[in-house]
Length: 192
Image 1 (cartoon, rainbow, N blue to C red):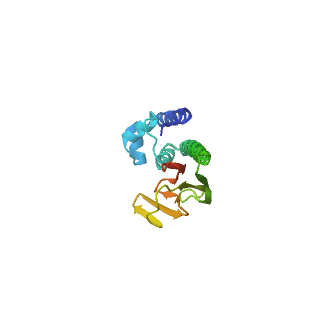
Image 2: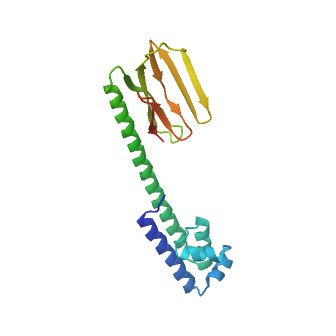
Image 3: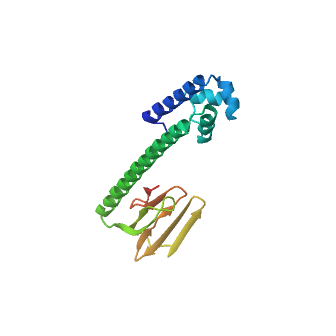
């Protein structure tokens, strides 16, 4: 995921602040590295914002430079902005998936001879949010071969039932996605 412009600017400013505090203390990058227990290249990369070290690095620099937690607070602020941006991106992606699923449900309902609907609301196994399971009833043109069939492999589980000469396609569960079969039997993502 690409960093936003605001995060890039914040990292650059924190790196500049580290370099200024280091020079003010009369230390070289190597001397600061020795005091913090990190490498000289870690100090250099942080100062030019090519790499964003863990909070432990910033705490060690605060202690070595007597900066009273200013650097760690800056790192915490950057982490908070990054987390907020990631949550916003995840929410936008979820809303897009839900819109696609609703469009597929609407299209299935408009198709002749097909019944479609939301058959269950359940908790998402990944985030705990509520998700809808879509089910589409597709009329059988040939006599049903079996009453119940289940296909399982490590990636997915599909269960179909023949009910009154109609084929019911239930939800497919994959490790990263909750999907349902549409009337054309293609999976449509509805969550994660």
